[in-house]
Structure formats: structure tokens, C-alpha cells
Image 1: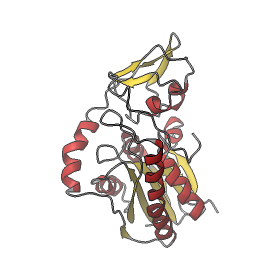
Image 2: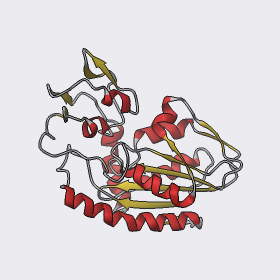
Image 3: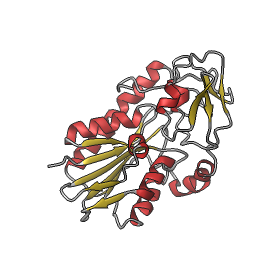
Length: 259
């Protein structure tokens, strides 16, 4: 039997860590959205599966654009009201991201069975400082409990809203903030300094192919990207910046997961 599948997206390791923990607890198979989109893999036979999971970060209290793009093209043959769940990782709160997910799935005649939230390390450097190593470790320790709770509920196919991190006025926050992301995501503010060593990692990991090396240096060849900031956080010499506003705000990748 084909193992149940978990579709996940992660740029700095938080959602990858949660997805791997859930997969280990449920014996599920992981599918990285970046790879699925690159290979144009949008058709999946779920006729023999009992669970279908999605694990993604929250951007501006909503869903990352790569997930919305993927869902628009997703085709699930053999769907028969299986258990479908969403796990949202966040730095603060998830807002109404699950509400967005439910609407997108409904267009496919798929029902969202359950939602979960996991608060981890906030890494959106355009707006703030990255937590120091000790503080980040403490936040990751605290994330273990909601991940464990999610694992138990998913194994039991628990139905409903298990998300304790939606925040107050979740719908309002998403309605106000998310359009800034949905209609923004400009690549123009990215800056590359002389510290660049032309390793090409940014081009390799960009989920939407927005980066190419030009003269050995990264150039953003698309006007918009997912705005995951993976290129910025994972640059080995910290040569990539967002308007240079992040110059002294640190970088982050979840130390509990392999890049």
C-alpha cells in the first residue's frame, strides 16, 4: 500500500521539522512542494490512502503563494472524503490561513477535516531581529508539545480546529495583512554584496526559479517570488539582503533538521 502523503513547504526548516516529526509518528510519505512544482507533479492517486496532509508556514497570516499555486493545479484521483488536515507553522499567529485553505480545497470538492498550529521561531527579518540561539532553542522546545498533540490527533483522525495560535481577530488580521503579500512579493528589494562567493545555493533552492547566476552573482529574473527568504537565510556568507534593512538582524535555519 502506498503510504499516506504529506505535502509540505519549508524555506528555513521550521515546517520541514514539523512535517518530518509527523511523518515519523504516522509513517507517512513526504512530498516537498518545491520539487512537485518544479517537476509539474500535480496528479496523485489517493484511492488507497486514508490521510492527506499539508504542512506549511504562515505568511502575512495566510498561505504561501506556492501552496495556492499548487492547489490550483492539484488533481486527486480516488478522493472519497478521506481525512485531510493542515498544519500551520508561525512565528506569532496563523490568522485565518486555514480559512483560506478550506476555501481553496472546497473548489476541488475536498473538505478540510482538521487544522493545527505550531508556533516556532519567527524569521521574517524585514520586520525584526532573529532570536538569539538560546531564545530560539527555547521556542523550539515549546513547539514540541503542539507537534506531539498534532501527531496524536492526526493518527486518531481527529476532526476540527486544534489550532491554539490563530490569534485574536484572525479573519480581520488576514484580510488586512495578506493582500500586502498576495499583491506584493517583489524581488526588487533583494541586494547582493561583495561577500557573495558564487556558490549558486540561492539559485538551487529558490522554489519558483526566480534566481539565476549572472557573472557568478545571483540575479532575480522574475518580478515576484514566493518571498520565503530562503536565499537570504541560507546564504553561507550572508551576502543576500532585503534592502539591507536586515544587515544586523541575524539569519536562521532550524538547527534540528537537515538543510
